[in-house]
Length: 524
Image (cartoon, rainbow, N blue to C red; front, side, top):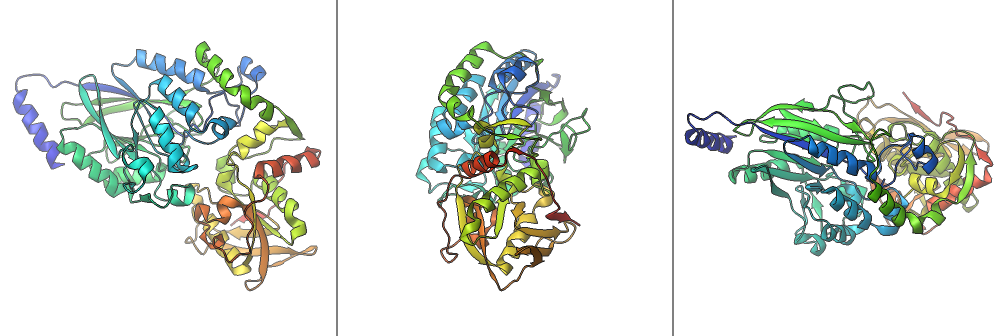
């Protein structure tokens, strides 16, 4: 970039005869924490005190406190940043909204975070309350929020912080389709991430900032696109796709960091299971000469900070009566991981869709559809508590019933599989319906062999026939791209019982529930 080049020339003139100074910065990072203040199991769900004592749990704020302190102690200069989605995921968020996230992030000493789509789940006002409570900047560059009173005077597109005498520019990114994923309201308008980042880079560079980090809640693929199509970015700290990057694990989706156009891209899975640690060396001109590191697993080897354990336990008291109530039992583990439920038929998707359909079948409803992104965890075998069900279904969605034609249902399925290669949360889990899809075909023409139950037999869906459908109110009102379900012309009722209650009652009535898949969704 020309501005950076001119700055560099001036700097060389001033330092003639002096050795160029290296600047080392350790970037500690988290993303997609989703209110997992307590330790989690290998299923990313709650982990009992007994299992935690036995060394079988991961994460939790108390481990992060210890790990961050240790990482800072071994670093020359360090920052701690977050890639978004602190909100939503456990009863802590349902009960306290953003207050516990703010308290724990302040305790950990974050230097900045970007807005994730889930930060908008309860509208701009709850996000504003969180921003007022935290002691660090919250960022979002790719949106016009000037007309939103709750955000206009507080949210920033980018900021500059100082560490070890050097200025570091931080830029925030949020999914461009957040209006489909959450509830930002009518006053927030999202825009292209590449143009937004380049605009902020140019502005920061003109101010003499030559070390620039993007905090991006846009996903691994978008991060690579931003890296390839911008100039002046040094590091992208990612989120949104819960991507595990590593140089040592065969389960990683790419190397840590992933280098694109000399930009180091990192992400550290989700739920506080890892603390990302990227060690970056800059030359005198702000160019990255080395970027090395690895996500650190927050397992039993990381001691929990006693003060934090006590504080989390105190905050958990009002939640315990709800979540410790045993509501059912599972004969086997119920697979609900995002890798499966956003790509193919999954056992949790079948459970939830079956439960929805069973609840309203006597109302003339024959099809159920649940977005895979609304399923947030698996459940292990044995006793099932309400807390586990609420971890799977934390959004307080209600059942919605409505009527659409067969043609509209096929259109909806096409939307559902349109982002399967990106792990899009719109992937459709269904009941009362069977279909096939081919992800190698162009989005919009992937679905085939759509069948519905007619009496005791499967028959081809009739494009002209009207069908009764049940979903959650988020999907019914156009969330995750299901705009074809929205509107006042669908004979809709959006105020049914809470989806988590429906599933808990269905599980309870099933005896020990046996998880299953039956081929209702076929990948070609």
